[in-house]
Length: 247
Image 1 (tube, rainbow, N blue to C red):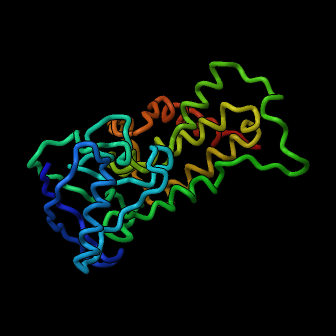
Image 2 (cartoon, helix red, strand yellow; image 1 turned 180 degrees about the vertical axis):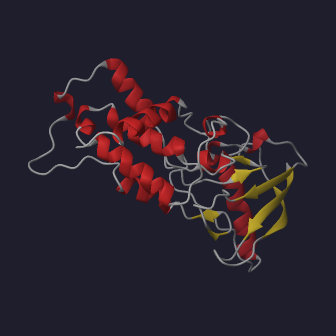
């Protein structure tokens, strides 16, 4: 199949970006990233600058393959990361527009690569369980009610790709932050520091420059792991409770 790719090129965070068009031939059985690999091999052979894009596991686990395809984070298929997207989702002769995630808190590093270290700082601000002494206990030694464990797992499936931020018209990170908070709140080990964690993580989220949530719901629709919006409602309850609670 023959395709036209309009790809965002940008040398650095502070340089101006632009779209550049490329003609490619791809098999419908290729993954989207394999198609970009083929294009980069051609560019290298032509002594041209290859397109910078992120990838790691290529199994829909790590979340690094984040990019917007025809205006949608991770492309046209729901519950799918870019590395899980195959070229059979497109038609011969189609034009595909590929660009980085657009958000103030995700500055472009180069081409399709953005800096998502703001997510790391949100997690560092409180998304962990500290242990002062001794060795961690066996996880199986603490009984957890099935419904509670299932809800924690649903939140823990978040891979931190940033699609929720890219999809939100406000550039909000509420779905990501709420998933991390709700995951740990449902676990007995995480309840001890819950109040401090909620306040710290939300404060850090605001400090990073993410927008406010206006309940559009696009974050859930575009999330490759389909994290439920109920996480945001839970986080709001936690926060209002936490600001009036002293530890």
